[in-house]
Amino acid sequence: MENLNSPSVPVRQTPKTTPIERFVWDLTYACPLRCLHCLSESGRRPASMLGREDALKVADVIVAARPKRLSIGGGEPLLAPWWEEATRRLTTGGVPTTIFTSGWLMNDAIAQRLSDSVTGVAVSVDGAAEEVHDLIRGRAGSFRKSMASLEHLNRMKRERRERGESCYRLGVEYTVTRSGWEGKERFVEEITTRFPEVDYITFGAVIPEGLAQEEEFASRELLSDEQLVALSESEAVLAAHAKSDAEVSVTDARLFLPSSPLSFEGETIAHIEASGQLRAVTNYEAKVGSVLEEPLADLWSRALDWRNDPFVAQQRNAIRSLDDWAQVTRVLDRRYGSAADKLRIERRSEAA
Image (cartoon, rainbow, N blue to C red; front, side, top):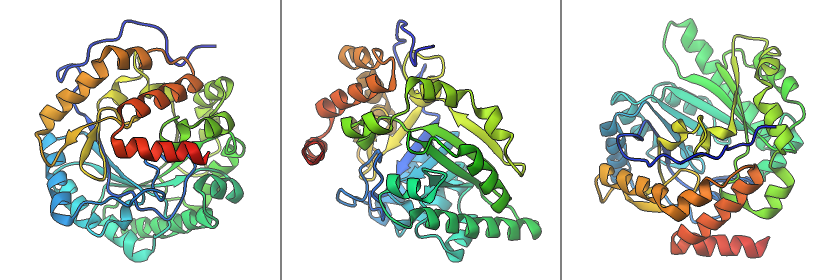
């Protein structure tokens, strides 16, 4: 069986070899859910959020960088009162913008606002069955909320299509854990039957970052090597269960690993936190400065320098499995996180 990451000589990253091609922007860490694998620990930590003026400045920074696309998340991004103004500025500026939501707040009015302000909406789901999704998401009723949100979004998309109007690309992002392993084929059938306007369903293994790096979760929910390989090879089988024209795909976890032929796209992501801080790499707590205070080019160069640091490169290139990856994340986050990050991680570890 092939390792996640094959040994090789890491390429030194520079702005020329590793340009910014995509942004991830966390609008807020406020969230109605308590997901067990949350990257940002949203819903548990202070609900950081920029004011309107600074948020629009961040949007302008992103527009000026001319990325191929932007993913907006959180927390629950729809809790930011200025989300619509920011996304309109982004899309008007030529940035394809997809907002990722739990669906908890969705209604017809929000679906309408989204149809006029973003190019994509993705609803996050963590299990084919209600009990699994609600367990991973940490709140009863969250599966029903996600399905209700798809009802609103599906209806809005259908109505606009019937009027000859453009609308967002509608997707479902399924994070695969051991608990959520079963039922994926049935899930594809049910979603594509019930919501024929859904454009795509993407399955991706839970990544050992944020809360998912912790030993208790990692030992219980990270996919085994065998499952990881099986998932990467299951795309055609899953797609065959679609009852509509929806595209069904599987995201290979190796995309995010250095020294893998698949890693380039992951390395070109610039991840902006809810405070405006830029992460050195999207998967780790290390920050290199605020896009509100310094030029993006300087911050990106600093991020690449962090990746090129001998200790960091040695750690990242030692990853051979998801368990290795979780261990490396624990090491890097505890070493390079901010003082607030380290305190939050310490409290998290003590609670476990």
